[in-house]
Length: 140
Image (cartoon, rainbow, N blue to C red; front, side, top):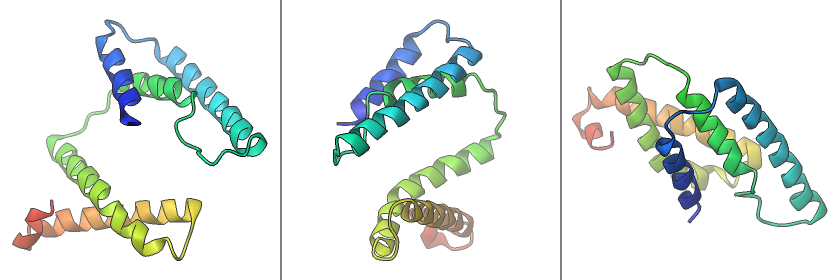
């Protein structure tokens, strides 16, 4: 359900003939992140809500971030691009294993950082070893 709004933002950006300027996108992103912080403080600290995802300010923040990133020209070779795509898929699939394994030992930000690090190391290792060990090609 949450993806619908972000897919819609991506579609709206793809339909634009001309993107907003890089400076305007950067300022819009900073303002949106400030609004998100204020909005989160209001709901979590003052209203004590349990849900802390998909606040209203996330939508313009994502819009401005995507517009900003689309205007940055990064030259990445085919090999690097292919590796990053494989890694992102493996990270997405494997993160749940690390969450289950580590949630008893750490929480919140430590859990996020450790799971992210472990998923990156795992996916990179699987891809690198898949050339040497044929069975790992099925994972990558």
